Image (cartoon, rainbow, N blue to C red; front, side):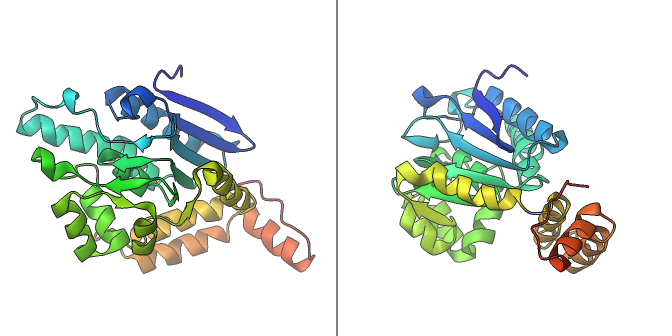
Amino acid sequence: MNYQQLLVETNNNILYITINRPQKLNALNKEVLAELSVAVANAQEDQEVKGILITGAGEKAFVAGADISEFQNYNLDEGKQLAKDGQEKVFNAIENSTKPVIAAINGFALGGGLELAMACHIRIASENAKLGLPEVTLGLIPGYGGTQRLAQLVGKGNAFEMIFTADMIAAEKALQLGLVNHVVPFANLLEKANKILDKIKLRAPRALASAVKAVNAGFNPQLNGYEVEIDEFGRCFDTQDFKEGVTAFLEKRKANFQGN
C-alpha cells in the first residue's frame, strides 16, 4: 500500500509505524485510521515481522487526539458507527495482534491518541509526554475503548478521575499509575523500545501469539481466561517452536525459533 499519512518500514524484523501528521500533532483522521488498519493487518501475515513499534512524527506529539472536524456534525447513528469501526478495525486489532506491539509515546497522547497507546501491549513514554482523555470537555466520552482499557490499567477510581476532570497527567504520574511501563528521556525513547523488541524477537512467535490471546481473554467477560490459557498452553505442544525450545534448553544453547 502507498501510505499517505504513515511512515511504514520493516527493519531487523520490526515493523515501524510512524503517524506522520506533525503539523496536526498527528491527530487521527479517517485516512490515518484506515492506513493503521491495513498496516497492522498486513503485519499479521508477514513472517518477517516479529514485533511492531508505533510512534508519532516530530517531538511534540504521539497523537494529540482525533480530528474533530471530521465528526462535528455527526448524529447518533453516525457517532455509534464511528466508534464501532474504530474499535473493531484498529484498536481491537492492535490489542489482539499476534505480533507484540509497543507504543513509543513521544509527547502528547490525548483522547484517541491515549486510546491508541492503551491498545498496544507495552507503552514507553518520553519524559515530556502528557497523557489524558479530555473528551468530556467536548460533550463526549472516549469512544475507542478508552473507558475500558484505562480502568483495566489504572483502576476504576483513577480512571474516573482522569475522565471526569479531563486533566492531563505527566509521564512520571502515568508510570506510578501503571499506565505506562517505562519513562525515559526523549532522546532514548526509541532506543528503549528497540531494546525490548530485540528481546521479544528472540522468543517463540507462536508462544507470543498464544500469550496475547490468553492475557486478553482474562479481560473479556464472554470468555474464561483460565480455559483459554489451558487451550493455548496445549496448542504450544503441537508447534515446532516448542520442540526447538526444549531441545535448545537440553542442549544448553540458544533456541532458533522459526514461528511454526
